[in-house]
Image (tube, rainbow, N blue to C red; front, side):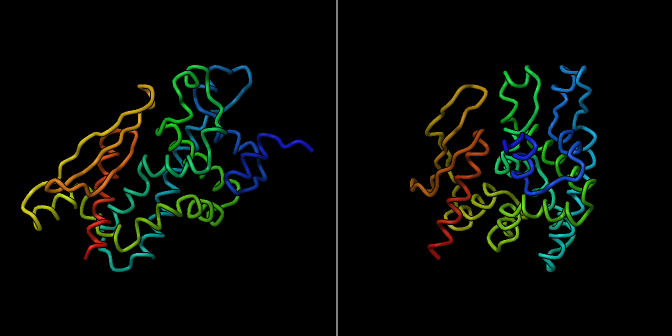
Length: 237
């Protein structure tokens, strides 16, 4: 028996719906609903709204339990990092939600399936669909699995140090304390079309290369390079 798009979507997210219309709605971008109004499709914006609240609850509950020694302010920063567009889009890419989306022709032409904002919003909508279909336990199970990598990184001892700032800030503080200097970032490569560029950045300290990073923006690549540099100096301790 041939697999349907719905079967593929349910396998990708790891949840089988009783009401498949919820999943269909979660995967329908507003551009598609506007272009194909005759099909009676409902876009995922209302589900996105609900999913944002459900995700905040689940992540708050998890980090409060996983990090009992953190103060309220640190927990808030950790939650903000985990529910950010960057974290959401990373998780959405692992689930391959971009492939499953129903997009309008305009968004298709502008690479909408790989836009961080669209991917992040879709993941929130899918979470809401799971919540409405199976309740909070099902939503929690889906969210913790989808964000397993982000949660593992964020609650590890090393990542915990980033609560007071980002990797670039931490590296700069280390450099100033240890060497009385600041790290230098150099863009070593740019690749891809304008709408989908990737950047490679190298960070050096006193002329020594400590890390390299890639990202969809120079800022993201610099953060990745700083993270690698911090991991390198920790191994030297």
